Every structure is written in C-alpha cells, then in structure tokens.
Amino acid sequence: MDQERYLGETTPKLGFGFMRLPKLEGGSFDIEQIKAMVDRFMDAGLTYFDTAYVYDKGGSERALKEALVDRYPRERFTVATKVNARVATSAEDARQQLATSLERTGAGYFDYYLLHAVQESNIGAYDEYGLWDFVREQKEAGTIRHWGFSFHGTPALLEELLTKHPDAEFVQLQINYADWEHPEVASRTVYEIARKHGKPVVIMEPVKGGMLANPIPQVQELLRAANPDASFASWAIRYAASLEGVITVLSGMSNLEQVDDNISYMRDFQPLSAEEQRVIGAAQEVFASMDSIPCTACRYCTDGCPMHIPIPSIFAARNKQTVWGLNEQAKKDYEEAAGVEGAGRADACIACGQCEAACPQHIHIIDALRDCAEAFEG
Ligand code: SF4
Ligand code: SF4
Image (cartoon, rainbow, N blue to C red; front, side):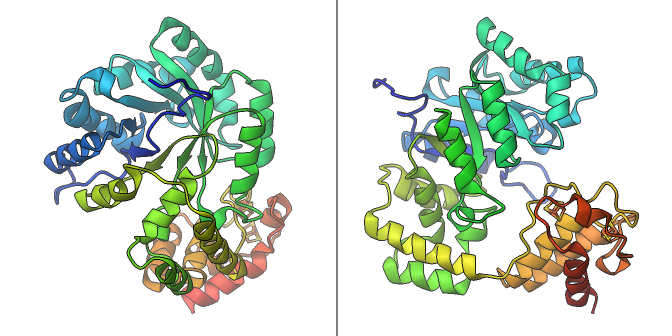
C-alpha cells in the first residue's frame, strides 16, 4: 500500500453502506442481488464496507458474511461495524455486541470499529458502559484495527469529545452539500472541528437520505445545465469526497443500478473542479433561501411535553413539504409520527411553553406547530 499521510488516505473514496440493502417481497434480504452488488463493487477495485450491530437487527451483518466475507479473501476488503449503547442494557451487554458482530460477520477482526451515533442524548450511556476504554482494549488485543465514533450531536459536544479522547482515530460525520452552510445542522462546523483535531473523516448520508438524488426543481435545473449527463447523486457524492482528509464516503446502495451509477464516477474519482464547485455553491444558495424550520432533531423538547407531541418528526415532515415539495411523502411521515397511539398531533399543543425553553435553536415551537397543524390537519 502507498505511504499514507493520514489513516485511510489511500482508501477508495466510495464505501458501501450496508444499511439500505434490497429486500424481497416477504421482507427477507435479496441476497442474490446483494452478492451481485458486492461483485460489481469489488470488481471496480473498491474495498470499504460499513455495517452496524443494529442494522436490520443483525441482518445486515449476516448479509455481509454471506455476500462478501464468505466469498472473498479477507485481505481484499475492509469492514467497519459499530457498537450501540442505546440498545444495551448493561456494560456487559454492550461489550458483548463486539463478539456477536464477529460471529455474525465471520470477519475475524474489524478494520474500523465505531461507537454508534454518539450525541447528547446517549453520551451518558457510552461513558457509563466504559465503551471508550473497551475499544482501546480491543485495539490492543487486535480484535479491531482502528476505532472512532459516528456522530450526530452538536459542535460543542464534538469539540468536548475530541478533547477528552484525543486517541480516537477518526470520526464519521453527516455531511452533504445542502446542509453544509446550514447554521443549525452545522455540517461545515463539525467537519472543521474534526479536522482541527487532525481526525480523518468518514462521510455518511452524502445524498441526505436519498433526497439529493432527486433535489428540488431549481437545483435540478442548475445541475442539469452544468452537466446533463451527470446523475444528481454524483454531484452529492463527489462533493463530499472532494473534501480534504476523507477516508471514504458511504453510499447506502439499494440496487445494482445505484451501484453502477456510483461506480461510474467513483472508480476513478476526480475531485470537483473549480467550475463544478461554483455550481454547487449556487445550489447551496438555493437551499439557503428556502424557508425551513431549523430543527436539528436533538429531541431536547420532547421529554417534557405533556401532550407527547413528536415535535422534531413533525417539523421534518413540514420541511419535506415546504423545502422539497414532497407533499404526499410529508403527509405520510406526519401520520407515521403523530398517528401512533399515545403521540399528540400538531393541534394538541396547549402552548405550555416547556419545549421552547428547552430548544437550543430558539425555535418558536408553538407557532411552528400551529403552522404544521394547518398544513397537515386543516
Ligand atoms: S408548548 Fe405544546 S409542544 Fe411545547 S411542550 Fe407544551 S404542549 Fe408540548
Ligand atoms: S425543536 Fe428544538 S429542541 Fe426540539 S428537536 Fe428541534 S432543535 Fe431540538
């Protein structure tokens, strides 16, 4: 392998996220298609696979064994998986996840091992279960090669964690061009904090959960005018991969077509040119001008709500409607969040103000819920 200046520098810049695998009608994995997807990916010289203990209740790790580990020499690929404190009942239970992941995948060891989805609401569990020391011990023992964490919290928490755990070898961040300058999502800020601490970055959700594969019409026009042949997803993935210090960019591929599209521009990855960066800058301006609710889904507001209103989910549905124009999907999301037993709907708010006092984004939640009630209940 070439000399690396940072961990993962020579890793191919497209990683295969095993979180949205294709399924058959009955709900089981379409393992034959997954094998074909893995073959295309491997044939293109790509090597990085990302799964997690919790994906599909372990099904993702098992599919990885069947489609990859049992079919290719171990040295030809790298595997990342994750320990999840939120689903653990005790320190022992959390630590057991590593043994279970090893057994499910048959991988023998993990190249990358991550504390999963660390954020304000679960950091207490990661600390209490001693998982930071656990991954250090496992690295020492050789069960894992490198450890880091995937992160969904605020910039302040990332700064705190990287100061407290300077030996974390990398971080996995949600970065996409639409949210890069977003003042609350803060993609740019968390990326810059990671780089300031010298950490290489694995990028997740570069296509914003699939939304940038089919962006709003104004952005589609801009991207099409610049390059009619490039898929919308290609702009998003190449944007993320063009950042400095990136180990790889994960794409949660769901079918062969997506694998082929991703490979077409990532097999011989070229960073965005200055002109392409300018086009993305114009697209970012379009997103910045949209009127969205700046909720970061931190959920600080929900615990104390006497009406059990799923505030962040309702706001996400409303943003889908106003920013993305996805009316039907937004209504479905709203019903999924507010229609479950025990949850309050947007119009159940009694304006007690508890949530507004808790919201770090200073959102006028009562007014915003009124607007959501008009949109979804009216
Ligand atoms: S103001 Fe409304 S949404 Fe906020 S806590 Fe009170 S009832 Fe819940
Ligand atoms: S409304 Fe505010 S407190 Fe609630 S999830 Fe969104 S950002 Fe957090």
